[in-house]
Length: 347
Image (cartoon, rainbow, N blue to C red; front, side):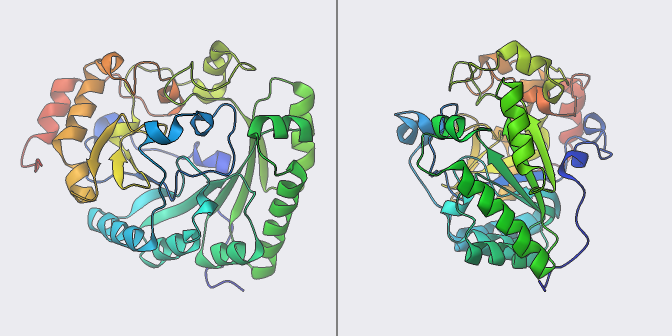
């Protein structure tokens, strides 16, 4: 039995429905609520709608990187200095399991108790027994598995890889079997982007219904630009009209409660900022606390509140802000400026 056995966490879909504090009343927060840490930006797929498929991806993303366990351990200590966060997400771009030290990341985060929940999002291709058991023993709360086609043919066409859908089905089924054998509590959430075909969507749901703890269809989203990647099956308007994008707003809430630590240790405000156009710091030069309290982040937040985001390359075409359940449109920029001014350190 795993050392971290416990009752299974909430269904993943229920996390978005949980009670939330009013961000407009609470901002500025003393620490981020959510942290995305990218174990690597290297992927074994080249999905047609992902920036990883671009010929110039390596150049535009600043190179290919893997974070090592020593760097993550130092980051975990810096998170503890800020305070325990709600959500640690071990993914951004790339396939997290490409980084062989990923189980150690989970172990460190759990041992240092830096987050209420720890989540990994994976394509499910590298869930071998050894690494799966180590992940389960380390105390992972959620494994989100992304499936890229409801049929073997569409899966191969979308991923542009050589790994068959059947192998992923087998991997996820065995992961859940190992979980149950070990008495672990990791929740397995399996999702597929809406294919635009009811038949294909239905086939995906049927294939994984008895394998995942929760199985669902999610709408496509963009990576800061509606013209990047192949999203031709689902129109931009269809995405915006879906429930996932239903919280229309002008001000992006994400920079007010989350940060992204890329695998090269640069820090961004945006979890879809693959090209690192919204970077506000670098952990090789500043601590996480200095970045969270620093002027670059505060200026980015003021840009949002003052409705100047349309001039920023990372924000001007983005629709991802509409996926957040939070809304800061009624927060006056001057009120926010006064709130953060008294005694707040600036870097």
